[in-house]
Length: 116
Image (cartoon, rainbow, N blue to C red; front, top):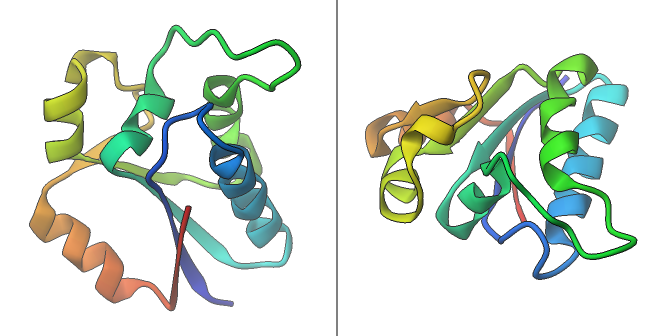
């Protein structure tokens, strides 16, 4: 079993990357891997509570909230990305903010890193 770090770096609806990353994370768990999710850069916008996705597109925020139900329990956000882009008070309770040093530890502990 590998420890896979999935890094989400894009806004929720600018491309299909957010949906693909979430699909990848759930699929990884289904194949027995330990999945860790990190939101950084513009990817932290995926964590905003009030999202209005375009018609016909799944709500990324709702999918993120369901990750713990799929055994994706380590969910982090880059603290500096959050501070520069949004109010940290709106982060979901299950998302842990990380400093740059803590983020480096996550990268070091991962068997594989996949960036979306």
